[in-house]
Structure formats: C-alpha cells, structure tokens
Image 1 (tube, rainbow over the protein chains, first blue to last red):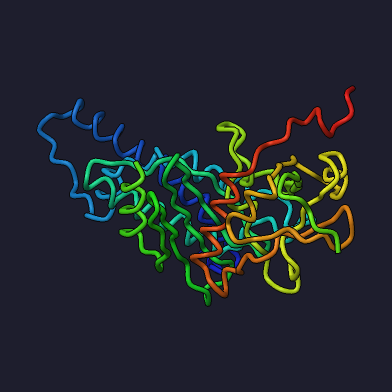
Image 2 (image 1 turned 135 degrees about the vertical axis):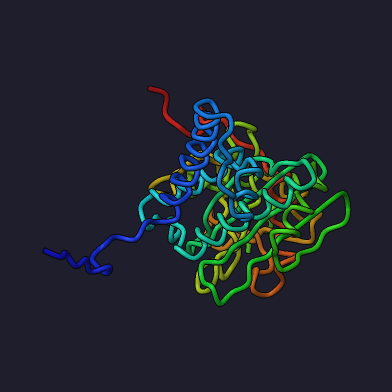
Length: 177
Length: 126
C-alpha cells in the first residue's frame, strides 16, 4: 500500500532548529570521517559541497553565545510594556544569516566574530552592539523586510552608517578588535 | 516650565531585561537610548528628575535604573525638558528613520555617559 504524505502537514523547521541541526551535522560529519578512516584507511571520502565545506571550516561554533542571545529573545513573550519583545521572523533570520556569513568572511582572514550584546527594538527588529573603549559597531536589522538593515561604526572620532552586507560587517568588526 | 541646572542628575528606567545593560561588563548599551517610532517617544526619551526610586516605580517591570548628568547631556547638544514633574524628556534626539547615523551616534554617547544605579538605591531591602 502506498502512503502519500501531504507536505503541508509537515511542520517546517525553524531557523534555530536548522542551526542546531547544522552544528550536530558538522560534528557528526567530522566524527564519521575519523571513524571511516579508522575502519578503512584506503577509503576515499565523498566530496563535500563547497558551501558546506566553507561552513565547516568557518568554525561558526564561536557564534553560539551571540546566536544564543537571539534564541533567548525568540523565546520571550511576544510583547512587553515597551513594545514588541520577540524578534520578527525576518529580523531573526536576517541577523543569523549575516552573522554566519560574516563569520565565514572573517575566517578567510583567520579571524572570528567577537561576542556582542543582542536586543530587540520596540517593533521586533534586532540590534547587536559591540562596544569597545574607543570604538563600537551596531548591527541594526529592522523588523520588516521593506526597511534596510544597516551597520553603524565608530572608531575614534570617525563614525558613519552604511547598508549592511556580511563583508562590511566582518570588516568593521575587524576594525574594532 | 522648570529648567534643570547643569549639575542635576536624571534617571532613566531600563525597560528591557536583555540588551540594554551588559551586566557582565556593567555597561549601559546604546539600545537604551534609541527613540521608538511615532507615536511613542514623540516628546523625547523619558527620564525621571526626582530619584532612582521614583524612576523605578514608573514601570510595572523595571529592570534597572541608570543615571545621567544634565550638564553632560547638554554638552551633546541635547536637553532635558521637564513636562510633568518628576517626568522629563531628553530632547533633540533624531529618530532612526530621520537620521540613522546621528541617532546611533548620540545613543552611543549617552550610553557611554550613563551610569548604572546600584539596586539598593531604589529597591526595598528584604
């Protein structure tokens, strides 16, 4: 008897779950590689797609504390006295994407994304702030896709904002190290 | 309208448990000084001119109180205007929608000026 599964009935994983799965998968791949090589040293490992290889090499586990803050915000009540507390799906996803891509970018230069302080604005947009004694970087991701995300950077007396890309975020985080 | 002397201290309530104060670093974050979109914060960012306790009582859930020196706020080109004592507003802050660079910069400068008030100054001892 054939079984038909209606895909609409299957709950789609959230970004958080995907990130967790990704971490487990990367660990499993590494462990499996070691185990397979131990079993048969002549075995040739399967080719790993470049994008997966980049992720594995980026060592994004160091992002855990900052992504963890976003996950905590995700688990908060939807609203508080100040406004919306929980990030919107768009703001959450875009923030995580930017952080992961910036980590990959930084890794190419043997660097890591430093830990920052995450919060939401009153509409569910995400802010991540990196504060140093004479420098700072703010990543601002609005609640809605229609509004542009930007990065504020201040080093000494110079400051500006620009529309964010993962490359520019990585660059400015490097500047304040 | 009451004008505050530059030597006065004002207090801002911390509305958010996460992200407004980095408790590990004991540092106030710029997020605490970003204006909300209209119609909220139309007159500026709320502060209390009376005391940390008075400030703390303005919110049902207050997660901390920070202090600002009025003279130093004015040095930034901003002001503090009393509208319904002990309530006052920090005025002159642009919104992100109007000038995102200055909104972030001034929020950053205010955060660097702000000092965390020890909870024993506004909480009853057990």
